Length: 458
Ligand SMILES: *[C@@H]1O[C@H](CO)[C@@H](O)[C@H](O)[C@H]1NC(C)=O
Ligand SMILES: *[C@@H]1O[C@H](CO)[C@@H](O)[C@H](O)[C@H]1NC(C)=O
Ligand SMILES: *[C@@H]1O[C@H](CO)[C@@H](O)[C@H](O)[C@H]1NC(C)=O
Ligand SMILES: *[C@@H]1O[C@H](CO)[C@@H](O)[C@H](O)[C@H]1NC(C)=O
Ligand SMILES: *[C@@H]1O[C@H](CO)[C@@H](O)[C@H](O)[C@H]1NC(C)=O
Image 1 (tube, rainbow, N blue to C red):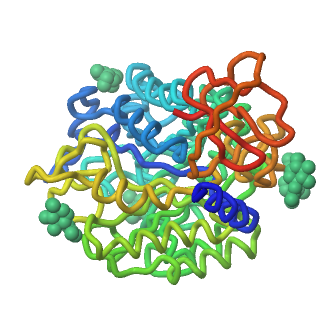
Image 2 (cartoon, rainbow, N blue to C red):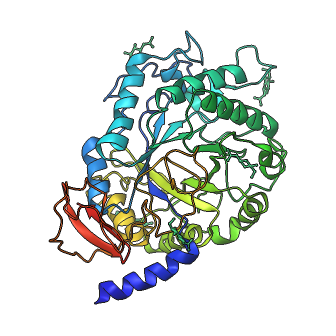
């Protein structure tokens, strides 16, 4: 009974706000192991898989997907450009095939084995050739005054090659670059645009996420200062995509300086994101917040609730990934802890004092109850929720009764008895008004989401 009431409320809510199509967690680790306190160029390159760097832990990806009952469908996987494209051969279409295959295995596990979406994240701050003191070191890509800098054309060649390799995988999302900063915003636009063109020329039509300046901060999107000029808002609207499937990539932390380094939350996203939201509405763009977070403790709880609810309530936001899980964090806190060793969002992580880590204290306690009810489970990644895999990514309506996908967190189980057809794969539709297919799940059980949709879930 309670389940039914919740379902009705959920349906009403979905009509107004069914816009969060992708939600999950950032996987950080493929970019690890290159920091040098004295700035020694080349530190940690190429690195050693499983020791200095590692992309995901398959077992903990399983935990996220299974424990959250199909209410997360996104992982953002970081990698390092200097490992993918070794400095000896330069940024471009020549990859270190060993590193690439390790990365591709992680992407394949997420998208094929688990069937959820994956953002490819070059974690390079729009810099290439010296990650030893990132985010500050390395030549700015496209800086024509710096003879050692990689060019915009090289950045495009890199993206054309990478996207071409994934062009038939509808569950990937191309995150063009993590957190550009302290450079001419017009050069960010030029680099983003060159990459978009190269991706489309490679025949890949999936969702692209384009960053702005200022570490792509949402609160500062309309602001300008030295190194963050012109304001992203006065430049980035010029971006174009031949298939209209690009959204902006936004990061938003909740501590005083928006850095995600403090355990004290004091910045309210619903207030700070208002100018960005108005700008997105004005120009008809969508955005995804691919980094945000807060420490454990009741004090950040209301700020995390605020940002997740704000995204759900404003249709210009189509998804989010929280920072961060990953196989190599140990007891270190990926987000928001003043150096405190309270664990990460990696399932099983523990604080230095042996108490539960942030998967339990932040994800399960604070984020899990807020998970969206509108996630996309099939079709090509899209600004419109992937209402079809064929049409170049446009054209979806987010309409919850369309054939694709809406799922809800209500989980009252129905037992189905009538089917004679073949079994439905995991996350497939197995019931609903006007549904005529099989009601037998190949794996998992058929769970009622709303009158129009039941789904096979674990
Ligand atoms: C390519 O990556 C592998 C794995 O990290 C590493 O062992 C190898 O030395 C790298 N090759 C180059 C040319 O960087
Ligand atoms: C571009 O390169 C020049 C020459 O090395 C340097 O002075 C300038 O700071 C660089 N610009 C940026 C944004 O890094
Ligand atoms: C992209 O959007 C523009 C502006 O709304 C429209 O004119 C154009 O036809 C769209 N292109 C595709 C491929 O949907
Ligand atoms: C997070 O948990 C740790 C370990 O239980 C605790 O010491 C710390 O005070 C908590 N942080 C906050 C902000 O509550
Ligand atoms: C939702 O999509 C279905 C199938 O495409 C369509 O028949 C229906 O009219 C749409 N409803 C709304 C409210 O857009």
